[in-house]
Image (cartoon, rainbow, N blue to C red; front, side, top):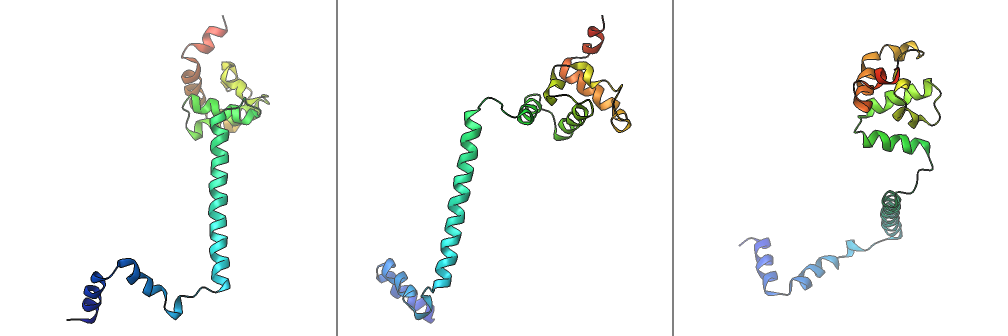
Length: 146
């Protein structure tokens, strides 16, 4: 029989914990100070990450009233299921029109008209029209002028 098979069969007769413990009692398994510091640093980093994630989770669950107009805008984009690119386009329009807060775009359909926008945003007129129709309905702008 091979030596490893003999050891395996011999280990089966003994308590498995005692057998495993023998492997840790070799001279090469001693921890030095450097290894302990590394282990401690890793454990500390894991604890800090878990703590940070829990704090973020608590804040999300509380759903405090919006103290940030940016977060209000982001939540409105999420509520309307806008893709990131669509939300970014709306943010650029709000900045170009100097709307304070930017979330006013969600209650003012005319702010999505291309008139008065910079040329770069005017080139995206079709996207803006589609967003206006999606947010306010197809006849939203025509109905306001009457």
